Image (cartoon, rainbow, N blue to C red; front, top):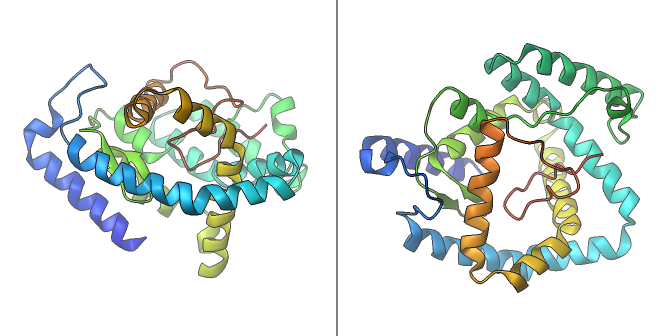
Length: 247
């Protein structure tokens, strides 16, 4: 993981040094790194097909959907401190107050976040990270970038991942083995909940790489620009490890 983060920093710096990397394009098919991206995308897909998907199918077979949803709620609750920090960095004081209240309610009344009473109390969930904050500050995303194991990204979001890791709370209070286990469980649960969506996308897309690229770019643009609220029923993305389908 440390190696991947270091690589993200190098890529981000190199792209800042090359103005062409940040040429502003309004088309989602602007992909100057496509030859390399496609190779990494193929590798990631093989890892998914032969490792992650079989594990996710096994998990889905033995774990009822309500339990998967409770786990999704739990993992989403763990990220609320990250959302709060980025709310403040973006000047969203009201959203930050809502996220603090949501975290307090779901961590107590909601039994460590497995349940979500905060939503019924009007405390809306906000999805914020450092990549979005950089975007709100006017930093352009740069070219589309596929990272080994981590999937779709761009130089801005790759750098943001480092801030995201630092802002998450549980790694500071849990041993490394527990933190790794939590991340693995979150990944498997999210992949299990997206089995149908990924299968349908692969079957219907003329070019799965292009489909995922365009979906990722549109998704990130919507988040940075505070676009229409993304449905919790459809946001178990093909391109986001994080399962944001908490109810």
